[in-house]
Image 1 (cartoon, one colour):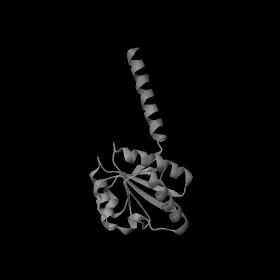
Image 2: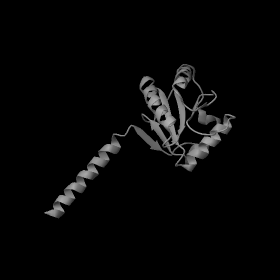
Image 3: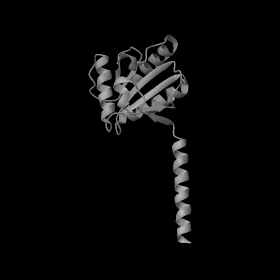
Image 4: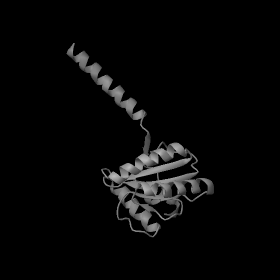
Length: 155
């Protein structure tokens, strides 16, 4: 009887865990090219087959500015469904931290911290505040209308 209950509870826990992972709003892969090859990327809202614009967001777990920018980027993803947002956590993942350094170097800037956002061929956006929201959204709109380069293509 007790073994039966334990089996039922274990089975229920497994079903719940599988359901939660299937309902996740981000998709994680390691399929980037070049410098980003070893990086662990999360696609906010999922990976798009043919994105009209790609935004790279480097962030750190526990960073309050990063958390605020994630909320903002969720809004942007809802507003602009053809925007692909790739997120790289850098505090706990060395490959992601190296990818940030390499991408920053390609853009001729120093990666001194996170959040750091790359879109098109524009100068990266370092940090985040409510004043920066307009700048990020303006660049998103420009890239959606004008075929900007994918920032990873510069690597």
